[in-house]
View 1 (cartoon, each protein chain N blue to C red):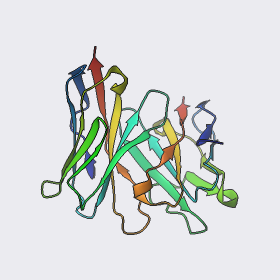
View 2 (tube, rainbow over the protein chains, first blue to last red):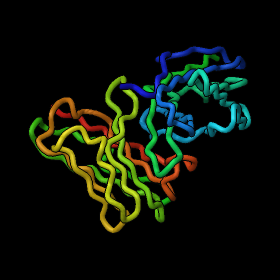
View 3 (cartoon, chains in turn red, blue):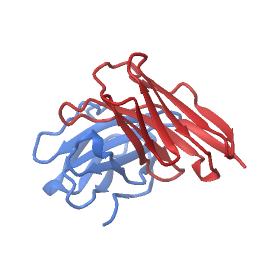
Length: 113
Length: 115
């Protein structure tokens, strides 16, 4: 039972354009969402997060949008840069108590120079 | 150390052998997690340690898997009688308090190959 889904295994975007990565979840108890970025042979690194009390959080070139009614979130990267090429994982948790993160299967983003 | 350290970085073992994977979390971090990533899959939760509390073992796939955390610091994940389906990258992460909002700090992982 995949509670966090990233339906696009890969995405290619021209340098300078906007990259949009999508994530859907099924568990209505999830109330905190995170995005991680992973380069080959390295562990994932935390990128940006959002609480369910918000619908948008922005950090520089990265913005995460949350649509609770649709159980959908997205990560926007603008403008996209070659160094953004990596695998992006969406993760979710319930903040009530020390809950583990549940991860999606990842989307491989390739930025084309 | 400054980050989460895992050893070995690569391990090739024969089917049926036991393996031990080590994780050194960031000093002072009370929470420690083990995940694994099989080929083409997402990160699968295995086990979670928080301070002196009993670990959350709900993600361990079989009784061949076990983990311990000694002195609230170093953790060892042990896989007994390894099978080919155990081949994966095993990732360890730690966080200061174990709250999701902190984000985790991951190590670089141990790539386990069972032949």
